[in-house]
Length: 227
Image 1 (cartoon, helix red, strand yellow):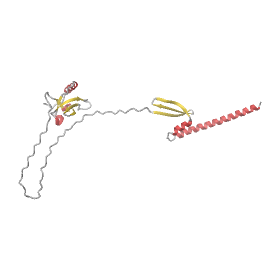
Image 2 (cartoon, rainbow, N blue to C red; image 1 turned 180 degrees about the vertical axis):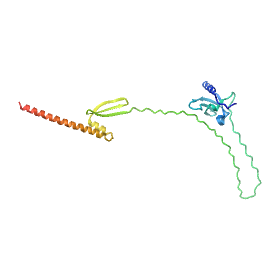
Image 3 (cartoon, one colour; image 1 turned 135 degrees about the horizontal axis):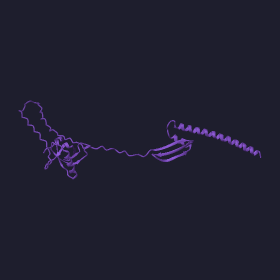
Image 4 (tube, rainbow, N blue to C red; image 1 turned 60 degrees about the vertical axis):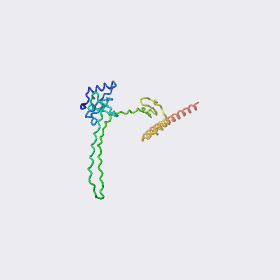
């Protein structure tokens, strides 16, 4: 079995067609696969080659691992799975029996135990596609506006592009209470200054009206006396 060549483009296409037909073609691992070279597995899936070069998923024993086409070759017909067993290490020869020593207090040195080399098989984890987290869309922003113009205070409310409340007139005392909830230096002072100006203008207008009313009452008294 020649396991030195990887899968060609036409062989990958043939495997794709076999998988579509419900078959699981057998492949043999090449020398590029490392310690499992020469063993046989079954192709169970072909993933996206643009995401990872290792897009050929092979079932080998109880494992299902991705490999690149260079790690695999088409298995000849009649080939079954062959497990490569490590060769047993030669047992060390027993040490020669030496003549007994007649020296007192001589400690016995135990023979060193030879540990068999451990063969570790590195598994290649399957490539994972990054999943972009979708942030839920929150509610539209709410805007409440307190405005002053032409001697009147108005309040309006809007959520996003939808008007919840059209501007309506509020009393100066209510506007002052609303501003008192906003702890921003200078805002309350500006509102109090506007209210003070309005108060002074209202007092001047009231004095003028009182003076005009006094003149009208005096004129009316003169007219009554002229009867």
